Image 1 (cartoon, rainbow, N blue to C red):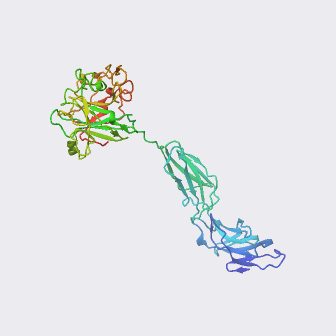
Image 2 (cartoon, rainbow, N blue to C red):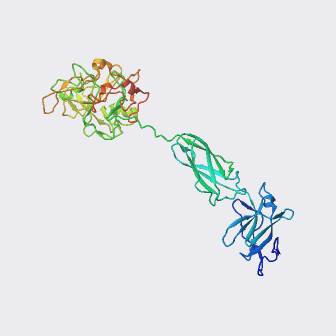
Image 3 (cartoon, helix red, strand yellow):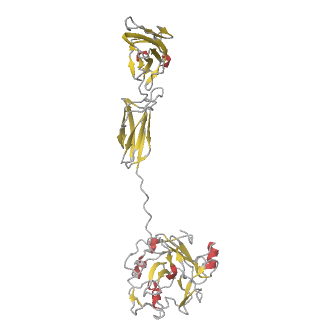
Length: 487
């Protein structure tokens, strides 16, 4: 029987009953690594069996052969249309001149000429994600897509991964799926690169990607620790003892996480004197006869912050020599001032030399702020205790040793309930106390906010520090530009 380009020859006795043969177009059988080179033919009746082999001749198109394939590679696939099972059949003959292939079957189903091409190593793909990947054991996925010569996915293929260089391979646990895809993995604990190779049932794929294992992320080192108390952070010194720069100021910085009540904090530029005492005498006045280091109202000051003054965490405040002149110099108001109050600037409490009291007014005399060769001390007194507490201290080069802070062994009896004096702990020997080298500059700024090198215990500081031990030549520098209120 012949219909179109298909013929069927049933030998005598192959069927015990008369059968009406049917030849019709069928649904394609080939897929995956099989390339169709001829039409699918459905033979009926479906499921018909024969006692002797039946010869079937099918047409093929040589133009459909993949590159590198010929009639020697031609086979026929047979699909059982009831079960869907597909088997490969070897032709009994091929007529290359007539483009016909002949085979024998003992049952009817759908037949189709095909060529088995296998994996195309050039079309198949290998992808690694993420890439780069941290060298900390993080897994990168190796995705393999196995394709045939026509770009068709090849399911059911076993894939083997290998790597050279850094990295350990995890093999795929399943063959390729319907999309021709399977996945493995690679990871490493050592920085470097790895080249991944893939074999699909013996065929080495062309694509061999590399993966970079980068050094694992290390968080930046924590910022240097900050002091646990308010610091002097900038001082713009005055230029002499007469008409001085209106830009002179002292800046305070709060490195802590808590708001600080400044109403018990004091600033002074007085040098210690055997005649006039020093700021450390504050709890004992007026009975101890000290003038806190002041010889008059003309050259030095002792200031107290007004009630209600606070310094927020991370904030800075400025205390100007002259509030109005500061505003002109910097285009903004200072927070506090010694004198020359203007705008929003708050007048500090000044220790008045003549009366021996603190008043919220400029000094009665023509006090002229500080200049190089002096110190600035920030200290605290609670109004009750026998002793003050150093908070911070900075002194510029040129301070003579007798004028430096040395409270060692000094006894003071404050306004507390008892009549017993308390004794200051030892300060650093004055001959070894550091100074900020100025080299003619007037602007000095703190660069170390942990007071590195300062003794942290056994001192007269608010936290037990010895504020006279700070290596000021290392923790402070000079600057060309003042930065009031700024980091």
